[in-house]
Image (tube, rainbow, N blue to C red; front, side, top):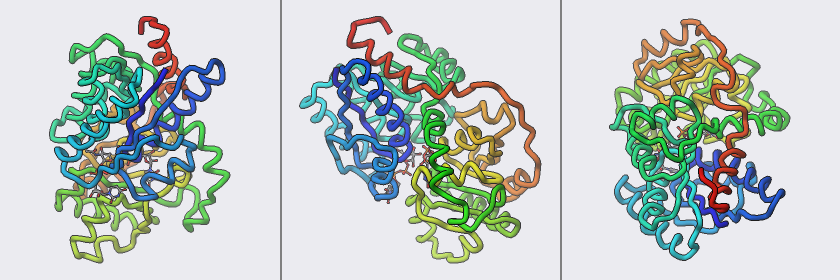
Length: 365
Ligand code: UD1
Ligand code: UDP
């Protein structure tokens, strides 16, 4: 059975690593799944792409499409055209797409148009804000998917509300699989001394969402709050290239004053810094969840989240991008409750691969 995996952005490499590992485990029992990876090229810097393939032992892509740095229409359209050619050549039995980027939507449309059964990893998430490009990508992808692998019960409920019930599986969160698999190695390989910080003695921050980077008021609000926090404890900010370009373009060297600004980190470095942070501030979907996996309080620099459980359990607060609101959240203690296994048991990828493999037996999914 041939699986065609379409990935292109940093979080997708991380998620796909767990599924590739589960495919190899399934094949150790009975050799029957052959994965071909298509890298759309959306993320292309070595520290946004290659490092994850090396560090997480992701199989070398069969295809590199080299499509990046374009507007949404051009990027998605060119990816669709190129993926279609690959699908016609490879004739896969099933396609896998991940998350909610332009690479996800292009892969999903190619599968739907060529009638290739398609599985969506991280199906059913909603922010209910259609101004987010990701919300449009995930709604459209879910509506053409045959297998919908949901990380949470909330995601299953969202699909039911849109009339999608067939092929829906609550499997758990694949990023939780990756965290469990690598957290000991991250602690072993990377000492906090490397960043000159101590256990629970620093804040970790990431910012890359278009709604924050492309709105000067929001970006200034976030950076102002980070500078205020940095007066009290070190603030480590590994900068996404999107954010780096925009801050460089502002021509305000003082914007990052007092912050420990780093290049994007490898996954193991990021994991290491997450697990010992006193607090995490982020607009990333993945980083919000990882904060919870490590039981580190999180301040989310957005007005809504797809990961509502983290907020309900008190580990995450939604504050948006207002400087005073962020500082208020930083000063207020979080109140936390524990709910067992809300993101699964660390074997989401194993379950997904079993469902996919069942397609080849003709079993009902
Ligand atoms: C994309 C996803 C977003 C996801 C994020 C993960 C879409 C619409 N957005 O946002 O959902 O959360 O990835 O990180 O698909 N760039 C570089 N080097 C790189 C990668 C990007 O310089 O390796 C630059 C691009 O040239 C572009 C900017 O960063 O100018 C934005 O890249 P793009 O892939 O369009 O969107 P992201 O903001 O990365
Ligand atoms: N990440 C990383 N290095 C960094 C920043 C983030 O490895 O410098 C990891 C992070 O631990 C998480 C994933 O990238 O696993 C999240 O991706 P990102 O924030 O780019 O996208 P999102 O999850 O918001 O779509």
